[in-house]
Length: 468
Image 1: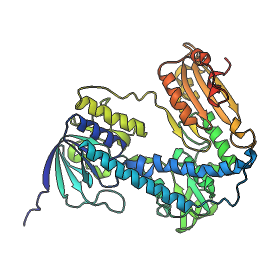
Image 2 (image 1 turned 135 degrees about the horizontal axis):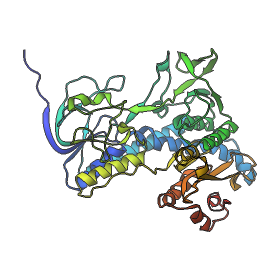
Image 3 (image 1 turned 180 degrees about the vertical axis):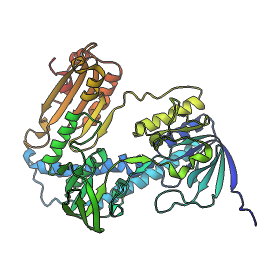
Image 4 (image 1 turned 135 degrees about the vertical axis):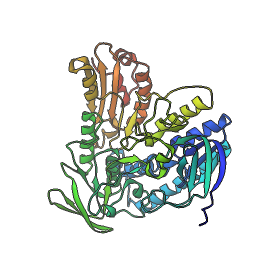
């Protein structure tokens, strides 16, 4: 019997599996230090954020917000006639922008001297990665003969994550978040399953684009892990906009045909709709990697790493969503750059995961940095913190006399006076918290906030005028 030929072998200082945010950042930074680097990617370049996450989602958020802008225009003296929403055009324009960004990221790799290898990475052993040229229908690497084998002095795993589809009769009839950016048209009614940021963001996007939305939430509140008061403010704004949120509701089955579906809930209620979005979380994309062949340990569906992004195999590292720590683009980027600085640049540093700002681009928008009220109580005790808040309707809504109210909130440690949490629900929340994060990171106290002269009239001035 003739043995199968071995794939051609190429040697690199660093092989990066995955051309998402973390992988791209690490590859370009390592190449700038003189390393010979290859990046493996079987999909488009840019990863979840650029292709099917942050960027196209935010563009859809902007598009959907025009419903509210046009609704309020009359109060400001504008007459808008014959306005209508064409979601198909918006979706097509978003895909065109993603294509542009994909090409741009490819050009950045070329300029950096990084070799882009088309295909999916799969470990053959601790120092060899096979390039698999195809995927099966489940999105996992097909068991085909590798077309190329890369020898790596070091390997960085940056394969990202994938949406998690729950085990549910008829689940294959539903969308996951990746599918939303591929739609050509939107149905009249959609059921969304989930309470996290993806579920809430798409509920608001679809609602703004004229789709009737029913959101099924298994628990009793939205946005688990965020400050409960802020989550309540988001819920209030979503419901005021016409989104129907049903708590203590879970789907039991999905039936019908695409475009004409029916969701049966656990209590037997039947909801007719044109589409179902299962926004029930994401998981690290580990299965196609053949980690066992390299001896890389996984734990609870993720790759554990130390403070230097190193796995249990000393020359194999991991960054981003595969580590399932803080699954945010800027975190993955900084992890990738810290790895390259430390290993190839002679500038050792570690990423600080303790104080990371985050946002939910719902409508109204939520942003936060530091400890929630609940987390602060757990750390310092109920008597060890003081809460300062402002709740009001912004000046932008003064004439329309409608729209969600803003909530600004400071969590202060009593013993030191330090602001340990800064939170906001309202217009431009993420832009405002980004700047507040600098102050929190420098250890600002409530007195420091109070000494800061307000910029009037703005929403953010409330952070520096809250009474003691």
